Length: 127
Image: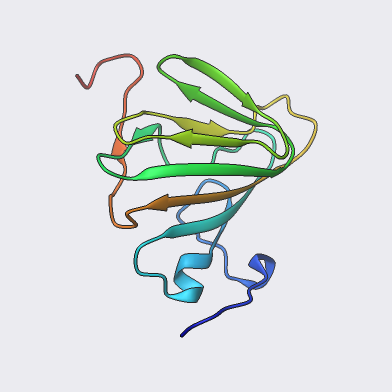
């Protein structure tokens, strides 16, 4: 059996992300679940690109602030205590708007872990 008690603030930041990302999956050596805590200042986004996954189911729990999520169907505003879920093949881009008054803190999770994000062009130029 394996158990972990982790404080995300004690974990190293992931330098390749456009916001402060702390990987719980890496720290706990999780094999199937991608799990991280993201903190976005105004103007920062959670993913490295507008994207989708072929198989991964993703969920974003908003721990503090209001998360904006862009999808081909429109924009969503996800408040503290709410969860945004993206099914496979569903493009999305989560961010904290430039005009936001506060940071947004999100717990993001998805499985399967190794379903790499595919870039999505909302203008349709990649289709």
